[in-house]
Image 1 (cartoon, rainbow, N blue to C red):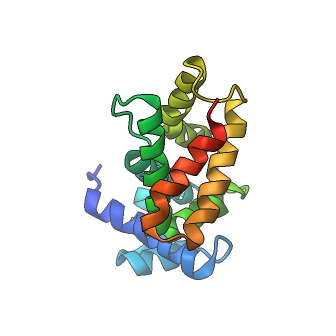
Image 2 (cartoon, rainbow, N blue to C red):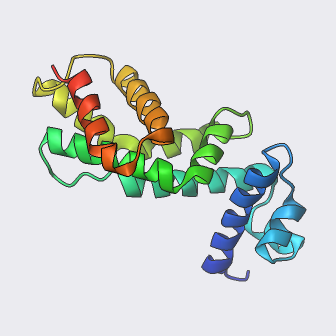
Length: 181
């Protein structure tokens, strides 16, 4: 069997994201992705056996990109690590609006496989571990972690829509103050 070209694989995933941005999930076609990626439709099926498999791969790759950019454990104490992650998340939201919209659309659809959804969520493990450490060290309120995550995600997503980048550290500090024990 022929070895898959990594550059072509990346081009296909990028084309899938662009197609979803242009036509939505329901308008996504394998032919459109192939055309945008500059490959034959048959070649696309060598890389992804179905539309669902393509979406799973694009979702996983995008979540990995998010996790690498935002959820890095750099061995910092809780507060500076928390503030750094908040600012990094805000920066990602602004710099990658199309990818964020794609993640949100697919997350709320029935097209994403449960195994892909579960695997992709593991990328936020450093944040979850940081929050748990903050609670153990009595630095953060003893709230359920999913509640804290929902609060952070909603707050930071909303603030990223209008706040200038210069305000990102202040927004992170507001989130810290809201959750501080």
